[in-house]
Image (cartoon, rainbow, N blue to C red; front, side):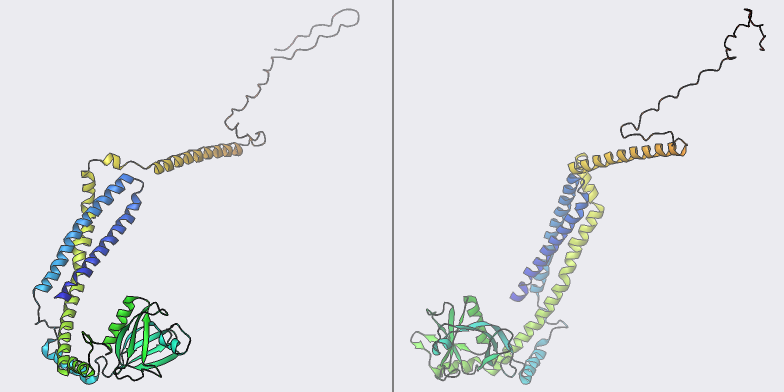
Length: 390
């Protein structure tokens, strides 16, 4: 039941992520209404409030789903392995050597640690870091993480682990691996002193060594436990019958947890889609407009922003300027096509609208041209008058 109860946190986290994504989508969509800032703010507020309300209902439904799983353990489920199948599975694992540390050499942990006593023995001093690979049967270390140059491989059989105090040559957290019978651990060294930079790293490495069968040193009020008592405790801890029972229980729990996890993975997205996503979409399509009108402030919501007003005025000025330019072009084209191009002088920019000067009118023709007076004839007598035709 504890494992099933832990499904609440990731399910609620999934709802929070969906709400965050919906909020981002609403904010991005309302960017198209930035011409009317008050309308945009009101629409975003209404939609976000509705999503928050549906978020609470969705979380309550998911909590109920987990409570349903905790209320009853359906061991008759068709996908449940059952006790008989779990026992046979554990027996097959034992026979085929799939258990950790028995036949297969499975890798448990990899990482950097420092060896502290190698440099001291060689007179160098200090510590040196290597890339360690811990498996169920051995501990190997390499020059670096590429695992190409292997330095040494140490079998873990009959080895123990104990804590060490940090020395002046190492500021990290230290522990040692040794043989209880006093034999050399590797080469000429009785112990292998390892150190980690952080306490969490050292605790993690010690737990990994425990999985590999390297148990810590037992301490009592009188000192270290004797070898015989320690070996007896170890035999009790690795009782084959007890291990089979533990493996059977593990198979049963894993089988049922797989059913519950699969059910939650299937139901939680459906709950989110039904109660939050689809409902929010229907609200936007059908009820958002009515909610905006119900605020009673539609006049203020339709006010444009100052930037949009400036843009509109600029566009109007550009429109009138283009219209005036088109009128001037049309007038010039009409004059050119009318044949007055040779007599027309090119107007300047400031004289484009000046009226042309009126043409001079010719004097009206007289009825008959006046003749100059005739000269007198010789003898002093005027010439005879000739009658004119009318």
